[in-house]
Structures are given as C-alpha cells and as structure tokens.
Length: 154
Image (cartoon, rainbow, N blue to C red):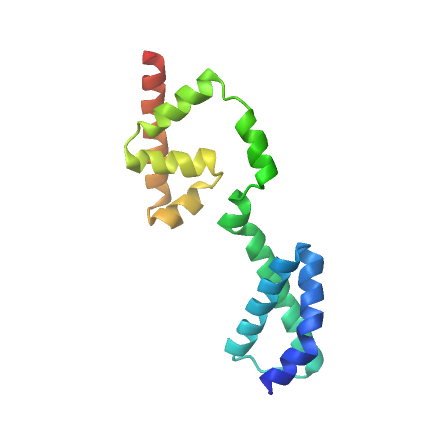
C-alpha cells in the first residue's frame, strides 16, 4: 500500500465528506489530517480501493462526531454570544447559589459543577474523576444537603 498515493487519490473525497458533516473548513482540515493519520497507523488489510474509501469516510465521520462531542465544542461560546451573556444580569438567587457552590469543599464543588453547570452524567463524572458512580452520587447528595443548609441560613 503506497500511502502517498492513497492520500493524493482520496484527500479531496475525505475533505468534502468532512466539510459536509461539520460545515467548517478549519474543522474539516483537522478531521482530514486525523483520518489520514489513522490510516497511516492502521494495520487493517484492505481488499480494494473502494474498501479504503469506505473506511476513510467512516473514520472521517467518526472523527466529526468525536469533535462535536468534545469538551471544547460543547463549551466554546462565540464572541457575539459572550457579549450577549455579559449584558444579561444574574438574578440574586443565581448569584447566591453560585456563591454557595463556590463555598463547598473542592471534592463536592467539582461534582456539582460537572453535573449541573457542565451537564455531565454521573457515569461520565465518575470516569473523569476516577471514582465509582456511587461515590459521585453520594458526593452530589451531600453537596445538595450542604447547599440546602447554607441557603436556608440566608
């Protein structure tokens, strides 16, 4: 398998597929690069040129999906949206709640932040923090209890 020849024959095809899926030229270029890197690292035996093309498209689509699921893409906000958010005012309750969350100990604060502010599920938080799911649930329960007590005092 001549890698350079395969890249030359398929780079436009993979780029168009990635561009169609992600609708952003810069992201499509990154996906093309990752796709051909995976081809280079792959130990798969291909039957013919069509098999290679199908494999490349499948990898490119998976790369697009991974890109859209990434932390960066879920949490990056455009400057226009950021400007708008800066103009909106937080309610007194929202500020008090944020202050209460920031007052928690780090082990409780991180699970509350990941769960409520970032939208992760218990299983994902457990994987990220190398904890058991039950431990994450217990920390969330205790954090809620502490927040409830703190907010009742005020």
